Length: 167
Image (tube, rainbow, N blue to C red):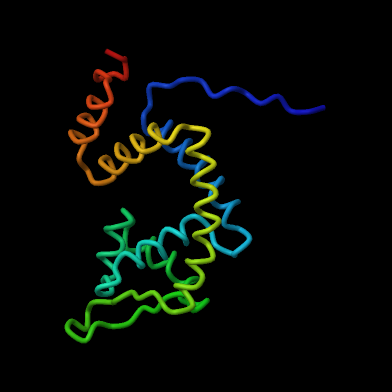
């Protein structure tokens, strides 16, 4: 007998709703990226490193950019380093600092993955709406950056009052 799937009920817990949505989104991107052997978290790391083309970030800068703690970033970098997609080297200027660089193989892997990532991105935006997706990203990044007032301003600019009701 097939299991009945319970509909997720609305909850007052913002954190719980956000975590459920994040797991669902991660699953969508993980499945899209699977053919090139990357997960959404690994793609995010490679993409973030590509944004640092002018200089390699320190381990702490990369962790901060990805909103991860030092232990988690280290654990997530190891398989990418093992597979030759990035290097972690000691800084010449400060021997206590580790610099993280995207390798040529990492740039190639990111280019392969980006095609699949874009397909997942387009699919989500088609279903959710590109304007809504852009607003959602903006609000989520404001939260990730610790700026809840910016998230509120973005919500108000979209014609909504606090509490999510339309004006």
